[in-house]
Image 1 (cartoon, rainbow, N blue to C red):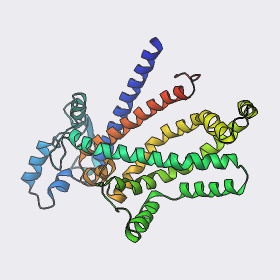
Image 2: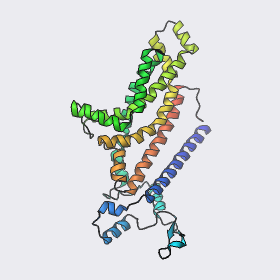
Image 3: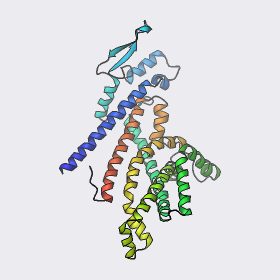
Image 4: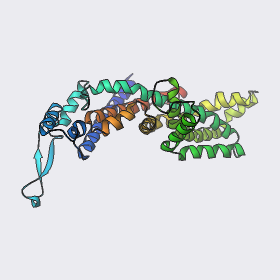
Length: 333
């Protein structure tokens, strides 16, 4: 019981540390990017009074951090001057809101950021899960076949396919799939999220590179496990080759695969940003690029990155528990 409590406390502390680091870095990067949110939202024709009212409403008239360095306007040769702003700044105010479950309001439509994220979050999770399913659907059979036929032409073909999947980026594969299956054949929609089939092309695009990596991992695991003593024992008992491979070999070889899956979730979430943009898929990635970064909506950008980071930490925690499920000898450190 004591070990479990310590492990839970460590995980909670790690989550808080990641949240703090991510929000701090994103806030810093947003502040140093050129541009004015008021002008981006209101347009170039906005009057100074409208801009001042916008900044006051969203707290943009307050300093960004605890201090800043300013150059004297009258004497450019005097260098930078340190200026302390105290605790009343946007960074502190944002963290106060986070502690109360409030991520602020969007600059563009004045809606709560939490509400906007909740409306887009399921789409991103669906896409990541579908991409993971596609990757496993391709990688496990292909990796097993390649491992069982090591050194043959089948193994060579599978290696070429895996190398092609890793080398082909999503921004090339995505438009190619749109052209083939949406424009030429007309089987699937090129964009959006209306029908269940609309997720097929984005999921294949996102899962292709991961399937190539997993194929190589499954192949290596199968080759390694086939040389173990328990495999010879299972064969001596008269078990069929398929039962030996899929019931014994694959189960023991899944541990490194689970490791890769946990680590690659971050890659899936990051790749979803590009994929959602290509297919106009209404998830967090499209929201982050178009409405957040494109319109300099600070609160929306902070919220999207924070949610993605927390999702990644939770996925890694679940991966640790999956280790123990696959092999009871493994103990969480």
